[in-house]
Length: 191
Image (tube, rainbow, N blue to C red; front, side, top):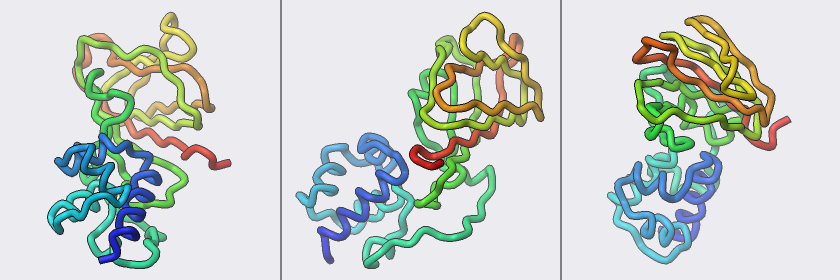
């Protein structure tokens, strides 16, 4: 095994996925220290651990042994196969993110299925360094833009497109306990 190649392949896949070492460790059920040592060629992992880490960053075991990992040109999937990830402390705000293109390593867009659940801690305004497209699929939400004063009520089928760096947040409408949306972010650096 060429451990230097394997460690760099894992690190590059993690960075392309915009995942932190902590996120990979949590998905692989390993310590973040182990992931860091693996990426820095300071540990020789078992095949079981290597398989867990490869899967966590969207690779198969065979990808670790090939000279150049090639992202598929076409990636089919379904909303039910989304890879659950933690993004922007989502779990603290009653949100679940499911990446719908996790296996496309060289993607220029990141589509997510987001579930909103009742939660006592409401998320404040936030911004993203890229454009964002939002499509409400289920439930009713209040879409706040620039401030919390005048939200726009959205119902299934309603959309919003935000340019980068626009402060916004989404909250369940009064009386709602669940909503689901499709959100697509453009990857940073893509024009």
